[in-house]
Image (cartoon, rainbow, N blue to C red; front, top):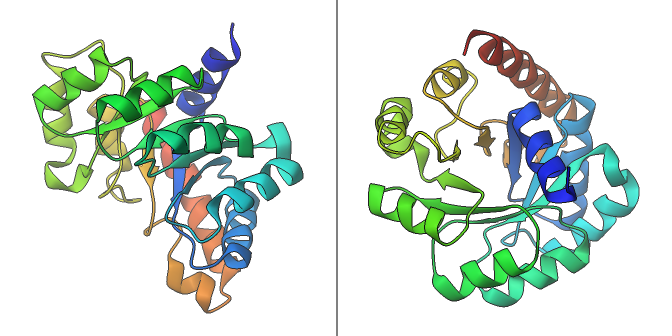
Length: 217
């Protein structure tokens, strides 16, 4: 199994990526620490996080293979190599654009491109996205993704946006490869208030809900 295949398998096994848009570098690192303490080890740091590349370097140095670390919100072709050099092991974009797609796939890392319509899903797949990030997932919900899986059963899909503890089971029943969760899993306001133990508690609940959902799916 290649490193790319191992990373994709790890993401699928975990079933959950924490999508983090931290308010500051220091608070972002503490948010990740709280998530890891709660059992969430799939971590996606967005480029919209202040000093995102330095944050990823710090996390890679501290946790290494103990977590599955990637970068999201890639919007420029240069982001792909920057993310890889910082230590990212997977890449996520919110949209599909051919130059960006090429840079992402040329990195050799697992790629997740954002799509929503059937045409976008197929375009991303044809541009070699390993997983389609269904974004924003809140627009159609699990029922919409289940409908997309009808004509595209072979395309792995990961909803992001609108994923909550309450609907995790529905997403996996609809055929999710994994899910991405952001503000509901790791609320920025809790980090600003220093309530990191609460983030850990939410993480533990998500992990338990994921495990239950995957057993039923």
